[in-house]
Image (cartoon, rainbow, N blue to C red; front, top):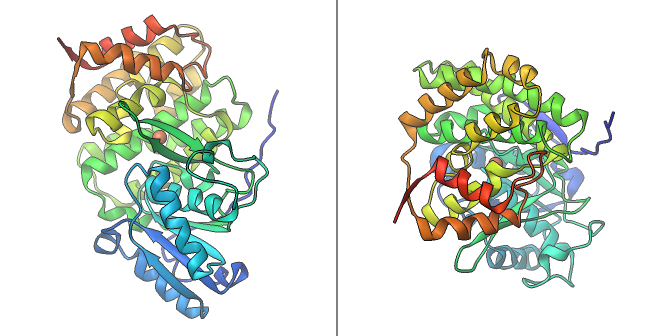
Length: 370
Ligand SMILES: [Fe+2]
């Protein structure tokens, strides 16, 4: 039995937990705040942070340039502000992209020897600027993970992650009310991301007991809440369940990592502009069908509140049919995507997928033409 683990982030949760936070000054007196362009328009997270920083007399500089699917170039560009502003710590506000940007910037700014070419080879014990994360979506789980997922260019851009032992957030402040302003489609996509994180971690090769415990706890909060949400129930308690589920899913992949739905979904995001959660969920039914052939999935089905794999897949299909529009992908692209996926975490499970298996999975799950 493997229950080794490392998860040092202090998590504070609940409505108003940012406004009432009084520990920023433990990290220093100057702060770089990183967020996306339109964050201030959608919720009060940024203004709450400003109030809280003012309460502790902390000087801050706000960068609103966090990219969706951040590039390495953008990380080093923002890292220069950490140095010029002499920031003691960084606050990342937003969804996965903003939080991952904050973590990556913290690594880049703390290590003079790093550059755009060698960034992904950073030593695991390298230092990092202290980071505080404030999530405004409910899916990524980035709040409790050390890794930052970045987009690396090329004919077909791919995702690569960077992390160190020290890139966990010092504090994560989880106020689910910030997620209320998410459009329905983004709410659904991010919840599907949580479901993918949970399933992939539960059945991962790298995972131990924590990935199973956290993964099933995440599914228990997320799967029924998502189904209620898409049926039209907009009770605020569902938002709290979805946010807590996303944090639990973060703990699950922190222990187990992701596998083929994420690896194969990345290209749908980078090449076809499919939102991350939908891009991964495209493959989740194929994943559970294949996994159920080699593993006992009864605990997983119980956590989701369904009686069979067929009931699970039908529910995913019904959700996807409302919110997701399938892209058409050229047959000539499929083999290239499959080759790239094989270089990622496709086989962080016991399915032992071959290149042909990956091609078949793409053909089963997306609309192929040509
Ligand atoms: Fe994800």
